[in-house]
Structure formats: C-alpha cells, structure tokens
Length: 349
Ligand SMILES: O=C(O)CCC(=O)C(=O)O
Ligand SMILES: [Fe+2]
Picture 1 (cartoon, rainbow, N blue to C red):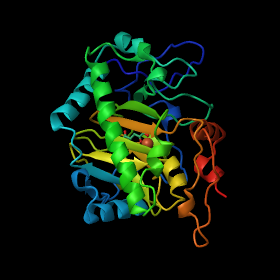
Picture 2 (picture 1 turned 135 degrees about the vertical axis):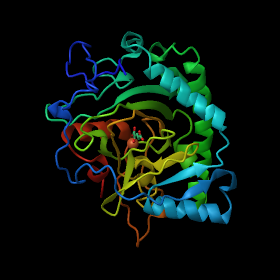
Picture 3 (picture 1 turned 90 degrees about the vertical axis):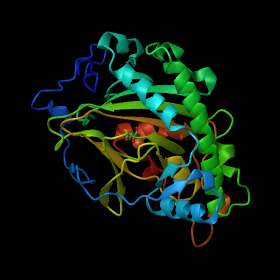
C-alpha cells in the first residue's frame, strides 16, 4: 500500500512529506496517545444502540420520536430511506478509493499547503507536543461556489469532481430536511429557523479520510476525540471496517456499520442553537492492524458573519441561556484548539 503520507507535515516550510511507515513495528512517538480525560485507546467497547431513522417517513410521529430521543442522548442517528441510491453511494466510495490508490506524486497535485485547511495531507501541526492522528485526508470546500478551490480537486479519477458535486447536492437536501425535522421535534413556531441560519452563503465541506492499518492500534488513534464544529455532519462510513466510536455518559461505544446508511450527527453550532437540549457528540476513530478504513464526511456551517446563539423559544426560566451568541464559530473553534481549550466550553455562560 504505497503512497500514503506520514499523517503530518512535520516540516513547516517545505512540503517535504514522507511516506507513512505502514509496516514499521513502532509508529513514531508523536502518534502515541497519552492518557486523556477521555480515557485510553480501546478498540472494542460495547456497540452503540444508536436509533435508525427512516428519512422517507421523517415527519411521522414514530420517526420524529426516534429523532428526538437520538439527539438528546447520542447526538446522532443512522439515516436510512434517504433516497440516495446504493449504486451512487458505492460510486462515491469508488472515486475515493481510486484517488487514495494513486501514486503519491499524483495525489500530491492536491496537496494541502502549509497553513491551509484544504487539500490532501495529514494533521496540521500547531504545537510541538500535539498528538498526531493516523490518518490522511482530502478536504475540499464545495459551497459557496465562489470559495471552491478547483486547483485542489483531483482530476484523477476523471469523474471525481462531478461525483463530488452530485453527492454534495444530494447531501445538502438531506441536511435541509433534517433541519426542518429537528425544528419540528422542538415544536418551534418556525420550522425553517435552522434552515435560515444554514441558508444563503453557508459552507459545505467534504472530507475524505483514509486510516491506514497501524501496528500499534492499541496506542494510536485514527482521529482524536473531538466534537464537530459544524451545524450538522453527514458521514458515510466505510462499508465494512468499523472504527468510529461515540461517547455517551462518560463511556465509549462502537458505532455499527450499516453499509448504505448515513451517520448524521449534530455539530457544536446546532448544540448552541438548541440551547444544549440536543448534543454535539464527542467521537473518535480507532485504527486496526489489518485494514485500511475510509470515510466521507460532509459538514455544513453557517456563513461566518451569521450570528449563532440559542433560539429564543428554547430559553426560559427552567432552561436559561446556556451559550453566548457568537459569529464565525469555525475560526473561534480553531483558535481554542490551538490554545488547548474546548470551544463549546469557552462560550458557556
Ligand atoms: O472517519 C470517521 O468515521 C469520522 C470522521 C470525523 O469524525 C471527522 O472528520 O470529523
Ligand atoms: Fe468528527
């Protein structure tokens, strides 16, 4: 499996990326996870009983109930009946697989530049003692259209771009439906209240993640524990290989693989808007010693100038305003990360 990058450009000035030492016995020290407040690496906690919601019946009482309880407890749900055909989902996986299988020189045409957030590479290194993720990612902004950096979009495979665009449009419609349904579960007067925040000018970013096998999967994570800064994330997991874990009541659970379902989770900006009633779950990705795992995540975020704060109707004496109103949460979140702070905690009232 040649052609992986070491999951970080340790070098800051040059783009002197190295090949990932797939078969080495010991991963470099900077990948070894230290004890954190989220416990140690454990590849096999119990399986999560995350509700499965049928989007084709989303506005029925049963599905709305499932959605409500899923978002209160797990902060995520598995979506079936979403209308995206299995063959198209496989096509998305296929272009991702073709891309990662290309020789390194070819993938480097999409290389993320130092200091940038888009393109192909490992972690952005912000501090000396940062623990690195065992992962390579291709991150691309799809909307708003004028922010697309087409020079980073792979030309190989030749249908990568058109597949990503078609997929993005489908996922955006699913997100819109989910925003409406969430407002309905909260009995808000305006069912479009979230849609308005994520309407005109909002950003949709695609992230293709590839987690190579790791000889020390007991000590290395594919992706460290985090919550998403997005409004909503739609994740297409690997069809076969597990790895994603979600945290609930201070314990980790494995997220089951349902081959053509989407795992939809809330991001911090929806937790803020919902005044904490619904959760932006902490999650992480483990590695395994044998198989590469891939995933495709789509994140939606409001335009940076959009104000995000708890929806007034969700604030009352029993449930006071939990979060400050903020703008440009994405940048704030990144600043907090660099200082070792948790953004959502930093804006608690
Ligand atoms: O690869 C996965 O399953 C999850 C990826 C993820 O959580 C993220 O990119 O924020
Ligand atoms: Fe995530």
